[in-house]
Length: 247
Ligand code: PGA
Image (cartoon, rainbow, N blue to C red; front, side):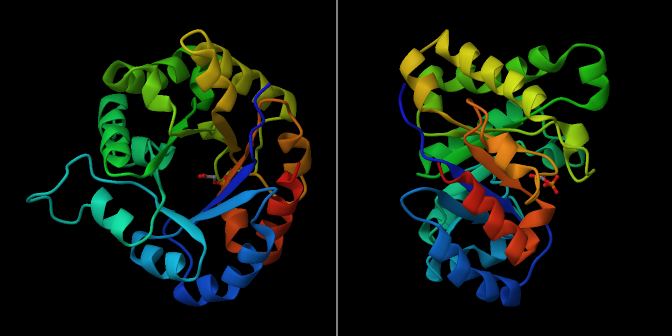
């Protein structure tokens, strides 16, 4: 089995500050290394600063357009110039609050990759979809939208984050078994197209991960790290989550 290096990323959303970034940077640099990669999805205005501090970083969303008259959008190429390495695409808040469809998310994925950013594709079902047994079909559609545009090869330089919508910011984490089941489904689905890409692909879990539940989640075979919201705003909690991902 191809070995996968654990990856933990903090998603600050519309939170945090320059002060918090300065406070956390040294500790992140100390924990990030051979055993785990750590990155911060800070608000876009802090990406340049984050990169200067030596912390891997990315934007929380990106425009699907390369350039032009699109007031307020985040340009992938400029994020790259500022030192961003990643772009989240399809976070559930973007899908549900800002109405981004699978199609638009796939376009953003394409743009991020074209401009040299590693897209982190967020997928996940709502509580109602889970109750109606639609978890796998929803996630399949979210992944298929990307595969239709780029083929399975598009997933080579990418990361997937499974984030059940009902677990985000709610304190309700998926159990390690529930999460593993979906991660295994995702890897098997991609393996049916290309087994090598599937074996190498990092699949992160996100949704109310904290310093108490992270070890058990990260110990699952197909969980390669986490996307951390609330707990990434607390230095001690975030660092201990990063520690717990070390193989
Ligand atoms: P949470 O957020 O850890 O606060 O649930 C996760 C996310 O939205 O990426």
